[in-house]
Length: 465
Image (cartoon, rainbow, N blue to C red; front, side, top):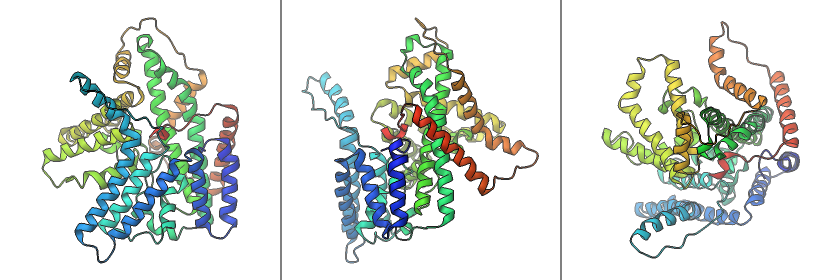
């Protein structure tokens, strides 16, 4: 049951909100609706998350028990982290590690290890990271434990952010779990945000996928440079509008429910460096890595060389978090290396260049790293780079984009440049009033629904993580 499906929009959402606003005990309605939402796609794994969450809750009580010793608290938080990382490792990385171990063992003539195969549960990476924050936040003394297991489950299963974030840290939402805000302004602003996110997904990301997917599906030996570049630009726009669209929908729905989630995107393709990019792209992930990985490793308190190593470790693990393949490891490491270069010399050199040049360089490099993110194998990525570099294709297969695809690419680029264009205006245009914003959102919603009813379904890209 995904946000852009007719069943969710026309059945689940109206019934859920009607019950939520009309019945007493809204927190109970929220939990039951969230459990149903996740169980619809994961009828078995929902129970694993439930019992894993019960262990987290009990460990949290142990961590905050007044008579607990420091050693007992550390053991409890360690057990909580291992509980969640173990769950993630088994279902997401078991096959990856076994296959790579077998490749090394075969050279030594050692019998192969069994390779486990699990169907990756939806949202597993997001769920695990959020559950870790609970026990760690309690150990750090940032918050008090959840008032009840009921409240803790509402944190874990809050359905708007359940499948693909934003990653919500427990200390950011703890106070809201017992006192969500229920105001007309939240209903209005949340609805507008949801409509905008749905339009990003359905009217921009999905049509771009219709061109990007076939391009990346071509054999690289038949890929001509023009098609490769157009396909890469289409994917670069697709992944932004797809993921930021989901975040908008999640933030909007949570706002209607009375919860305020933190922003996840801030015009990332206008970043002037990779450091700036990660302050703008998937903000909830980068802040999680900083708070729960980089700072515990020593952060900036250690030597310069050690901080560089820590940065590379963080982004190597970020790559693995996105997927169990070497391409994701390379993607993460490439970002880590460029971030080290930022700190070592590049940010100083950038001061000599115009701002728009730095933005263009950063956008180009980010786009190059998306090749590893999108291609299935390392060989596929290398072949794609050769096509981008102008290598003559054998039996070239030209994919000519439709006029509407080219129009959407131009519209997408225009939307990305809107913040810049606004600054260039002699006088800043007034923001649209509430009535105009609602009217525009209603038009976007109707156009999105029309598109959904006549086009094939495309899942959100980040559901695979």
